[in-house]
Image 1 (cartoon, rainbow, N blue to C red):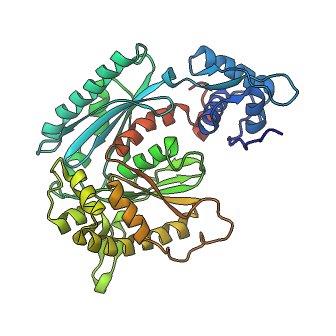
Image 2: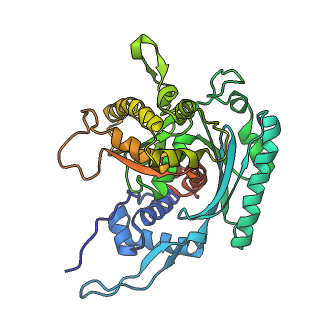
Image 3: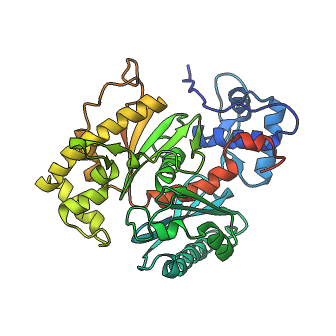
Length: 401
């Protein structure tokens, strides 16, 4: 007997005027499950077989899906699975950090095709904008050399930078990137590139990457605890990224702790910036990632002492996240080197009791996600793909993608 794997998919609707939503539902089902037959898609999405056939034909004409070799199941007629075409769409992601900017290009399924990075000069946007636009142009030009139809199939540019957004902050505040916060970034990028541009904070971008190809792939409820220069939480709730009323949902790094009665933001105690200060390392040094990774791998006593203190605060953060959001899992991810992140994850055990501590779990309460300095740029690139192709309620109100 053949094993029957469960197929995960959102429900489509057979009412008229909802073709855009149904297209997104089909694409999402293929992204989450891999190649599926028309019959499988109809059962999983609760759409009629005729609706699915019409959408598959349309997506095939648009170059977004293609048929694969027929598969025989049991004694019945062989079925033809359909899968996403990686070259069906492309997007560019841009990370703007305090000292570095990174850009990369991905295809429809999240493969990284080309990437580039540059140091950001001091002086904020006045000097940094040209560096950023030149970097995006470099990646875009390289993408054109790799994929002939990339310009026609380029769905947008995603940008990510540290939040929170829209707050009154001092221009020289090293935590808040105040000069960049008050700069019309979206308008400048859109004018400079001619692309549709979206903006999210680095924690949300990390969650977008995990949802596309990482530990949150196929999950409807997950929170990504982002560990970088600062700390944030990317919220995947009900299968969609939740950004809040002002794009600042999940800014857990600003939560105040009160050790010895002195209220201190979490990220001042447990983010990488506090480790750099503890080690007396310049965060602008281009070798800082490798330096910290090597120290963590060697169990350096200075790193060990920082981990012990940070793990206590991050353990409390996981408890708070689980209590408020009831996720299927919490994913520790971000720009922390893998050796450091792995040791930190181990030091956070045992987790504090919470509503997530229950029998029969198939997914761990806390797990390690991507630990890569490029993950924010990857998530930024995944955002235009998500915006164009993921099922959203707003898509039901539109006639086409």
